Image (tube, rainbow, N blue to C red; front, side, top):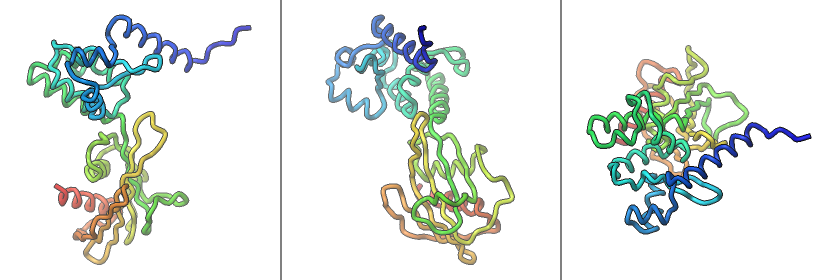
Length: 265
């Protein structure tokens, strides 16, 4: 008796067959062909891939590039800018975004919105919003001072938001605490004299959560003492900021990250 093919394997096979057809009809081309069309060498191509301005899909173990990345009908400078904005998403998703029609873009493909300045501005905003959904930033607040995130105690507060991971750590943390995304528990929030905020992010499809920074926060009278340690182990010099009227852990954390962000800029 023939065993049924699992749905996941069937979808994987269909995706592979679709990619092969894209190679056969010239929608996807080899690295050598793309270099020839773009009039660049392999070293320049590798640099464009690292920067996100160009991307490839894997077909039967080999890299193939969307032919429209070298199509002279499209504004290549602007197209590479959009590709860099889409960089958080997997290559398949980036390809679909660029090649498909979108209702939010007037039922047009992004490739059709590169020449007109107004269209391009609209496309940039749409691409930025689309790319953000591929990564989540989380801020967790724990009672007490910690060097690493404690695993056996429950956070005082957790907030998560979809934000482009290329934005700075402080920018993402501040935006996460200000966003109306996931948060738990709900108000009222407790007060804590000493607590630690951990910032981390996770990209869609990546099982690992990646730590970004921890911020040790001590409320001392009318002042907040702050110490930031980034993922690379780099520690920022301690500094202070006024507490203000609201003293819950969430209010204090928002004030701290807002202060750090303003100091950075």
